[in-house]
Image (cartoon, rainbow, N blue to C red):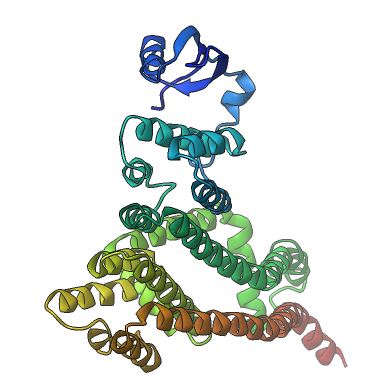
Length: 408
């Protein structure tokens, strides 16, 4: 459970009265922490949260920090460090101006840890939900190399690139997703509300034999209208079981393998994983992160378990003394172009530059694939909707056509 928030009023080292908020186990603990910062506590009170604020806190959402906030923070932090501001001063300014309350709380804790003598990377490492292994490792490398401002800018670039790539894919898939939802909604509504009307009509016809398509449609309508609770329960159980299965190591690996083998979307998933792999490894290599640690980070951030598994085996080979490109060639998930570019990069000492070119290539490939998919899927989905509705209508009217034929 999170510590309560306290409001305080103190006299700082210059004699000015300053007020603010801070988390702590109790008022005495907060007062002690303020005194350790060289301040004289004048008033420390627990902040009372209104009923409305208490009710709108949703577990898992209220404490979430958006990636865009981290990108903006990284760029501003880099500018301040480059301007000569101390880490504590820069963190204090950023803490005051950040708009996200959860992020402000995290920055407050990071600043407090830095004031107590903890390194910036170690302080950030205590908040893994906000600062990933990639972020912390690069900050640590920047601290050691004395290029923290440059490292922060690189972090902002890579996070922004990842964010833009995801945004493009989501935007491109939004329209097909809406059309797909409409197809399911329209066909379900027709089966639940329209088919029963015709079913009553068929019952008035007596013992006339219904065509097979009509029988199947009437049976499906009966299931959805009479046993809807069972359908919903089985669907929920299937979704829950699938989500549990893909959280297991074997399930995750199997599902990611299947995704890469899908007819059209598999290429998109593969190119996205290669783009992320190349971009992340390029930045880590340029920053000076040790290669074995960089492989671990890339494996964790690749977004695909099959790629991660291959990188684990590559790591063992590199530890045994092989180059980085050579063991990659033994895994089909890495195309020959990637391996050859990395081989040239290692031979010329320009591995980070070659990886950046590979990342640029696959990012363009992802954009082209998304555009092609969008233009291809839209008409296909429209045709599917027409076929679905048409099949239902034909199945409904088949008995009427048969009766008309008999009468004539």
